[in-house]
Image (tube, rainbow, N blue to C red):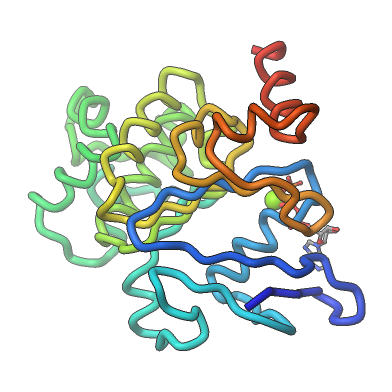
Length: 237
Ligand code: ATP
Ligand code: MG
């Protein structure tokens, strides 16, 4: 059913949004600032409920999934990863009491393992206040490892690659590609290369889905929003 939502119900910021997210698919969400990307993510995370309609995720209407299941199924890589003044291991475990093998597996999948073992005490190395020891790209990879360590069925990324260098971005891209088919990935992307291989890219404009398709199909829309965004970024890089 089509979704309408406003923080103030009298002033909707998302309109008539039809969105079904098949299990195991990789969905990219793009759009200009203020177009409603973070709002859509907040609905997907059930921070808010839409005034009308609902989103289907993994074949289930979002409101029907019970809280406990939902929390266990979902992983989030936020725009600003929050790192503890603790070891690399503890920053991935986050008090869940995970086995070492699971921590390492998640770190490998997130492409964080290599830089962690290169630290003087490996996984036991204190990362400092807010992860002060790490580059912003490395912090991001720790956040990806943390999310993957919970073995989420659905992984959300909010602009997770906007501030990292292109080398690290390629690592994240590779990590996402590997999840394909097993984990549903929903990525808000500022840097369009991150979602280039998405099964479906949703282009928001003023709270509506303006364009939708694969990278190639969106690039073929004459004077399309996605095409213009993409070409602008090519010039910028
Ligand atoms: P950006 O690329 O800048 O992050 P965005 O696409 O994520 O933008 P949103 O944050 O979803 O955009 O904002 C969509 C609209 O909703 C904007 O008009 C914004 O002002 C409004 N909005 C966002 N958050 C709130 C809020 N908590 N309360 C009221 N209005 C909000
Ligand atoms: Mg946003």
